[in-house]
Amino acid sequence: MKPIDEAIQRVLDGPRGPKTGAFFDFDGTLIDGYSAAAFYMDRIKRRDMTRAELIDVLKLSRKKEITDEEFTVIIGQGIVDWAGMTEQDMRDLWGRLWQERIAPTLFPEGWRLVQAHRRMGHTVAIASSATRYQIEPLAAEYGIEHILATPVKIRNGKLSGGLDGPPAWGDGKAAAVKAFCKAHKIPLGKTYGYANGDEDIAFLRTVKHATAVQPKLLLETTANEAGWPVLRFDARKRGSATAMARTVGAYGAMGLSFLAGLGYYRATGESRKSVDLITQMAADSAFTVLGVKVDVVGEEHLWEHRPCVFALNHQSKFDMFAMMYLVRRGFTGVAKAEARNVPGFGRFMEMAEVAFLDRANSTKAVDALKPAVDRLKRGLSVCIAPEGTRSWTPKIGKFKKGPFHLAMQAGVPIVPVVFRNSGEIMGRNDQTMRAGTLQVAVLSPVDVSTWKVDEMDVRIEEVRQRYIDTLENWPTKETK
Image 1: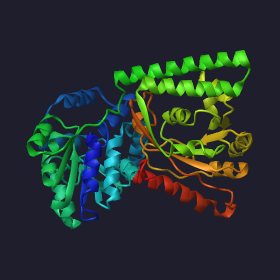
Image 2: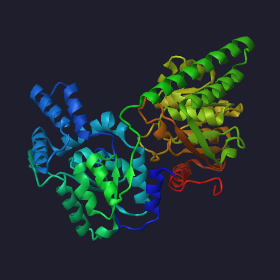
Image 3: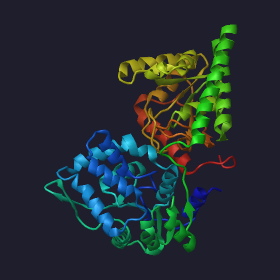
Image 4: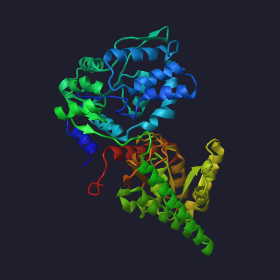
């Protein structure tokens, strides 16, 4: 069992209910790096930062240790830059930075830890020296209600440029956690804490069950002396040299598979057999080069109900390769219209009779599904993501009706395919893929033949709930 799995099991073996508190540091613990860096990089890109400010930031980044007093001065200087901005201005700013720079650095392991505590009904909070505006997008994505952050002063609906109390740093974070527990009647003996910085030692000593995450040197030493568990997550900010090399190798292997399949097509004129040959060769060779293994529960459902609509939860481009590996033959898909222009792969999708959707035009999107219905009636299965777009986390988004209309019109079942950790192999905006074991649960089919249009919303939500339940209670080959 991996350290992260052991950490999750410790949570699941512990007490239930809201009188148990779980406190997570933000920068360096739930995200890879520091949200403030996203702000400064954005200012540099927009040429809003002066040379003097840049020098100060560089000096700060090189300091090995910062005292509580120094941090108060540093964050105070930073907040001065926001003077005159409204709270909505701040939320707009950090919402944009979240999408552009911060969300891609989420640690999937951190998501799993947070969700384990939420499943146990614990009171979960983020405790961070950042401002709440920096934290709110992640808290909303993770379903975290409480934020303990450095307070800023508001006057007449605008930031004044000053602090409204001590920053949640060092002893200040420990004090904030104690005060929160007292206010919510949470015994300190029933608390968990996760953090990465040396300044977090006081906070971690406050909680009963402390865990050092990506610890800096002094924190790691303290953790070893105190017997605290230590977790290390895979870097998210950029792929390792190995991951980059394997990704290039995987794309190269897929390219060779395409050339081989294209040669077979030119020799035989058999388009479908060529597509199936490319699919199997490309997926097998790419997974071998990447070092990706696949653990499938319910594999029989991949074969027993064809033709069907394979409906998958969607996190990254890797999901497409995963479906190629799983379904292997006799299928097509639905893709964005711009995917047709991807060099090489766009040609393959045309050969595979993929239905291309113009999302900017809903009428055209409806029309584009008609060929997919025809393909289903001809015996091809269709792979499609009901969420319609990739997600930053494994959280299941709202399902669109298109896949279910497809199945109803063609008279075929929906076969749910649940990916547990595809985002750990390749995140939403990643360009590299990592080695690992992809976990897949293929659920029993959904018969839509008796569905009525006026009950679609309720029925679709029932199917969506199956994905949520599966992710929360992952089946094994013995329990499926």
